[in-house]
Image (cartoon, rainbow over all chains, first blue to last red):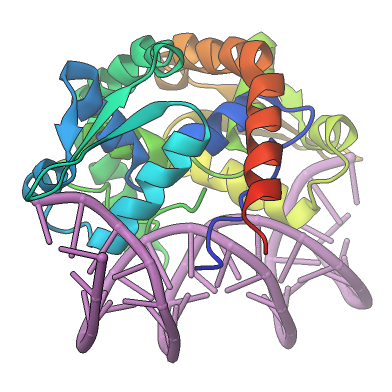
Length: 123
Length: 123
DNA sequence: CAGGATCCTGCCGGATACTG
DNA sequence: CAGTATCCGGCAGGATCCTG
């Protein structure tokens, strides 16, 4: 698994730094669901069947590395693993909520704009 | 992070939708500087010499497509082009500022965490 | 000065199969 | 259930040269 390399922190660009934390394709939505309560691996899979186990693991591990989420393994049978926001991770909460609200409010508009734009060029 | 697919808005995932708008590698910092005042192409190049003209054009055009920035061409010699936030783009302001502050506040911590993590694994 | 045109590459994101 | 182990294609991101 020679995956996640992810640049140090994108020096001299604080906005970029923040983006390296939340910028994975699924991280936003994962964080959003973690705001509410701790979640299990399988819960995420049910919420978003499109995420493969591999990607889910990858994104969660990166969030864990960055100190955003905590991974708690319960030594039971069958195994259970719960992911929760750390105190550090909770400092991101206002931003995640803003992003959710903004996306909900303007998603349709964006979709229109992008469709128009895609139609104009290719001829 | 990677922009997803260019056209679709990542259905059913408002946080992801927002990320498709601001998630380009340089978009965050571009938006941040646009918050203050309109900027010229060359200004950005001076602020961040690491951005190639090609990438700068690309990212600005995407922001333009999404209705976030306005591109004003002044028919002068030498040519002058100014980029400014649209009213729509200004709705992102609180989030950009939050991202900047968060990045400034926790960049060092993240850098440490990632360095530690990178040192532990590779053998 | 502000870009277009071209070509290239590396990692991101994914598919699939297997396991403690 | 909650992951690994491999393999891989595509596109974001970049380098370089050229132009209105």
